Length: 136
Image 1 (tube, helix red, strand yellow):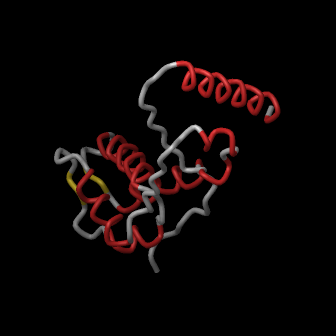
Image 2: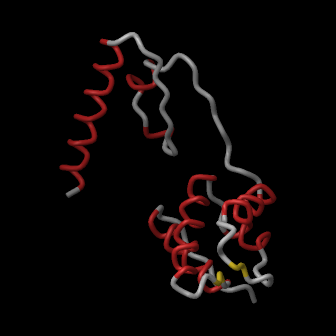
């Protein structure tokens, strides 16, 4: 359950912090949950860089650029609308595109809005966001 996974998470974090103090190395870490980090962990990092989520325009561009060239994309997909509805980080966009490309490969290499929405909604559910519906 949750308590057991929390315990394993705490053990892992404590081990990482011990190793960081033991060795003279450069450590780089990333998180989407900055607010949930404890102060002891944050103290170990001298520099912190906040990288905001891409803008709506940036998300639309990422959706288009990350898609493999081998996938035929339906020209009627409104990337700007999709980017507005899927307000997520670049990493999640990568996950969405990889899932959509895989589904499109099973559909004769043709990416449709239905396939794209399916990929978006699956990712949104996994990260606890509300799903989106077809454009009206």
